[in-house]
Image (cartoon, rainbow, N blue to C red; front, side):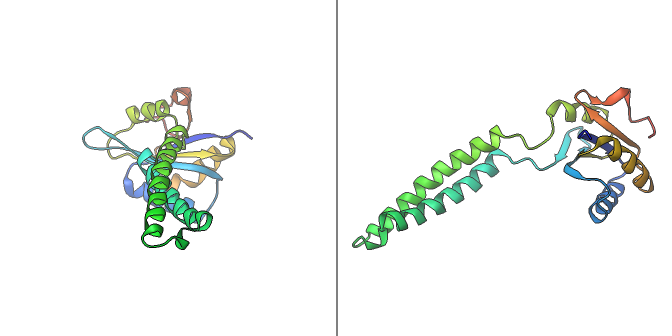
Length: 180
């Protein structure tokens, strides 16, 4: 059982949407990760996947760091026992420092960890895509069984191509003109 990436190209966005709904309602293949790749009218490639950007990582890390530092200042330093405006200064300072450290850590983690597909694979695929023909990119556990099953079940959605995606793009010289 070897995992791999399968590309399914559809003639319309509606066919893609219907196929995604079908795959969601009928788990016929064990999908680890999925992405949608489409080419805009301007020629720009649009990718919808599960990547976390550094900005998103920074926001999440900053919020969590701020909350944990504020709670920590109350518990560990007994900030509420200080007289006057002491609790506000201690808790506020801890929240700011925790937020800054959490933001930095979240950005670093999101940059360091790669949650998506290889850029060269997607670049090769996007060169072959036509405008209005979106692709569904699926990372599956068993590529042989996944290919056979997807070819059988996605015919009803007029899939134009169902092929493995290798390190150099579509494998074995597959092109969008090939019928699977």
